[in-house]
Every structure is written in structure tokens, then in C-alpha cells.
Image (tube, rainbow, N blue to C red; front, side, top):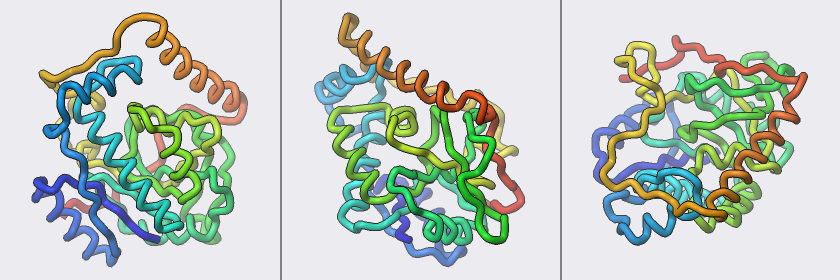
Length: 260
């Protein structure tokens, strides 16, 4: 399976970390040069902000465009791909998990979330599948509002997402709520962002940074319609989850992670 790491060209420290990590784990990878938030004009950011019902930062737009770049490459390859953000730390069992995904993947709508975040998800009580050793499982995600630091996606799903994101969306929130996408939580989680390690100084997990360039949508019916579309998608997911799921954090084995 190909591995692509979204990485800013100037972020030398993170690139060096990823190079060392991939070598240690024996993984082949490619960097995807991230879109730089500083290069986005105010006019471009303001236009993008009109397509999402909430404050938008240049970093949000750059992240959105960077993931789209990765999907374009997945479509061109025609094969499953693990997409990582450059602060992703991988478990030493990642190869086992990727092999299980390749062996069990049977539905193009399945996109696999390998990432632990402290934000509770709504996850099916019964796994979609487990590997033969019982060491890795995939379970349907009915709600996940955050996290695209590590996920596996195939060309069909990537192509459909490209068609649906020609305008800006807050991408991690948007992706997991697509009505056709059957997100699968891989457990134990195989990816975690550096900031979520237990020994990291405790701060609110999802505080948005102070950014002087914050762009807001215009008020009115269009913004109301965008918000209602999001709420309807969330409501649909909750109805599907009723009686068959639990609200909880993904399971993780912290002993499998090293930040060297």
C-alpha cells in the first residue's frame, strides 16, 4: 500500500521526523507538498469562507486543498493509500494493520480511520471485521467530528470526494459525515498526533489558534441552508447508530508508539 505524507516544504523538523520514523518502521512513502496558508490571498480565503457556516482560517483552507492534492494522486494510482499528516506518530504494528485492511477491503465506500483522538466517536458495537489473529478490527463510525491525520482511502471514494469538494469544506468534519461513506475505525488505533500523547502539556484538545486572518460567511439564508445540511447529515448518522453503537474514544495501545 502506498503511503503519502502531507508536509510543508519549510517544515524541516517534521520532515526529518517522518523520514526517521518511516526508516525505522521499514515503510516506503512519498511526500505531498502541502499548500501554504501564507500564500492564500485574503480574497481567496473570503470566497472560500462563504461555502462553510463558521469562521474559516487560512490554515483550514490550506489543509483542505492539501488533502485534495493527495486524493488526486490516489485516483491516478488506482489503489488504496494511507494518507498521513506530518505530525502523525505511527504504532509499530502499522504494517499489520495495513495488511489487514488490504486483505479485508471489499467495499469502495469504506474509508479507514487509523487515528486516535480524545474526542469521543460514535462507533458500532459489532466490528465489521477482525483479522485472523484478532489483533486488528474495523468498526463502523457513525460520528467523528475531527481527525484526518491518518486514514486509508481508495480511488473510488477519493474520486467522489473530489467531485463533492470543488468548493471549500472544513474537511475533517465534512468527510466523515458523507451519507455514502461508511467510515471504519481501525482498533487499536495506529496513528496519533504528537499533541495528543499523555505526557504532552495539557491544553484544551481542539482550541483553534489565534489568527488575525479569520474569515466569516455572510449571514442570511445561504448560511442557514449550509448549517442545516450539516445538521441533517449528523442527524441521519445518529438515527442509523441508534441501538447499535457506543459513544467512546477509539481504543489505543500507547506502548506501541515511540517518538524518537
